[in-house]
Image 1 (cartoon, rainbow, N blue to C red):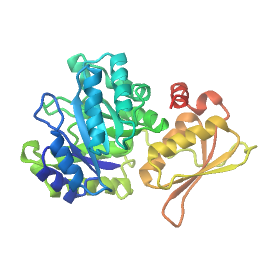
Image 2 (image 1 turned 180 degrees about the horizontal axis):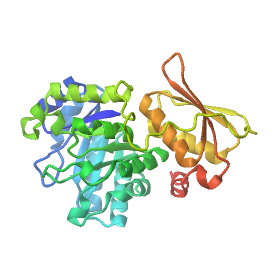
Image 3 (image 1 turned 30 degrees about the vertical axis):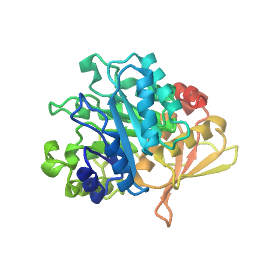
Image 4 (image 1 turned 90 degrees about the horizontal axis):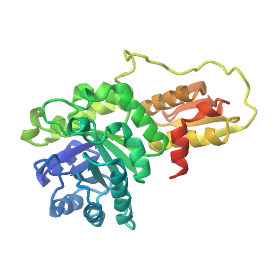
Length: 352
């Protein structure tokens, strides 16, 4: 999981950078329900942030105006932002798709990634529900998605969606190869749930501020502590599955049938969890006879593969750590084609 910290000025950007944030997310929290920062600030932040650290731009809640949003997305590309987030509240699904497709076209020739965003509390505003986030990102040809919140009354992401609901959304996104991000007034005490969900990106603001107060500004010590706690869970030093309800370790017993095909190795080194899940899904769709050995960096990614296997009815024959510290799993795919992948994901991957 990467840590994304929202900043409103250069002082905060440098504090987030000093604290070890992986993504500096430039936005304007004073404009409406979340708005865009001035282009000069984005330019200054992008020039100050080293290339290995992402610098993203938030457009916030965008208007239902295709050309206006496409122009804003183009500006983010021209400013060399790592990604641009396009958020929807009161939009029809088809209009949101049209806007995202226009933004995607506007980014042609740039390296900036398009991130679609919905808000978990959208139903409070008669807005587009976050349940359709994966489909919206797919149809809008996004590179990833973010689920966030808008309310400022103390409630956070988990007040609107359960851990299991968010995990399902994230897993469906990963199966499509989309980057997945969760935000919305998240705190350190939410890290166990977040680690079990295992999005690619966790976004924070208040938790990265001095004394946890959003009004006090981002402070490097708060960023560093959140990052430290996140890494403790990602490396398995804090076992977030030990007391989790429904905790499962997959089927690590022997196979009930021999594989008639070959032996396929998928090396997940250097891949995101979304890339690993997408590669596994593609492999078992085309070949349910061969055994699949997957090399997985990271403890939390291994749990995602276990969940993927259980969801598709596949059998985990063995699981071990190699000398590099990576987890190696040997998987026997289910011969049941209907269980191998979810139908909606099969269709959507074919469209990407």
